[in-house]
Image (tube, rainbow, N blue to C red; front, side, top):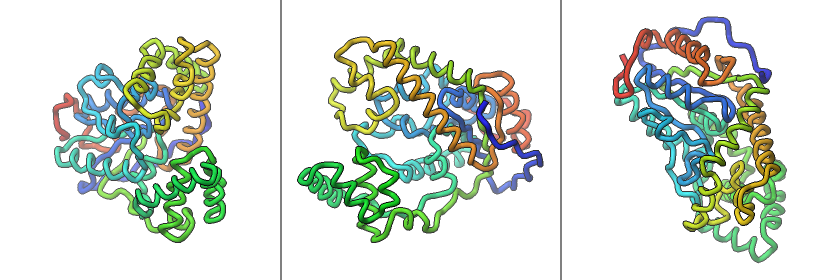
Length: 341
């Protein structure tokens, strides 16, 4: 297993009645977050909110491990398929939409269960984001125009280095969207990005949050990742990429940068990807899982569960943790159409 902080031994404080329960399931790709979330939603009459920067895009389904209708088992899922592939979607926009969903679920007395694979999105929702300048299409167009006249992204990166060398050091010269957004913030706010982000944040209020972290054995997780990549290809991942291109999705669309999509796009003309390409995708996914663990083990207040989300003992531990933290839910067994006690 990956090294993680120990679970807190002290009992969690009683939840004030004014606070609504919110369950967060976090962990690396292929750890079974969706499977556990659906099982818990079936038990407690809940609904699932995806917290994943890849699953928000329409049409990019197989390679992002978007849960199928069969896997959802009738449990409502939110924040999937909410933007077109060519759209720009930020952590701030995710927070705005997630807050709307949470308010709706609270009004209907439903338990929200968040499946968090993208740490930045989770942080944005729970801790809030600084008030960065809004997107300016006019400024973006001027920056893009200047880049085209002066040598492309390298020009944008040089400009950012002059304005904000710290941020420039963290952004690849090839990442056009991040370069333009960073320049946009610097120019509109008149100060470096880090100074803007240090401004006051508005954390999520009105919720008692229980964070459950999945920590399966590392070797077993890596084996499952390799198996899942092959299963995705068997399910038609390559055909999905071909259909996206055929339907006019631009090559510059952000989702084509996701794990596996760029490789499959580049190998379409060669037919079935070679074993070498498949293993490269699996290896990149394993590295991504490791980065997710690095991020999540810094998350405070997580109750870590040793295993996959579809392991029976993990489900039982999660049920126990929820009923202990939220006594009003104890002993409840509700279909997804039910309401919280």
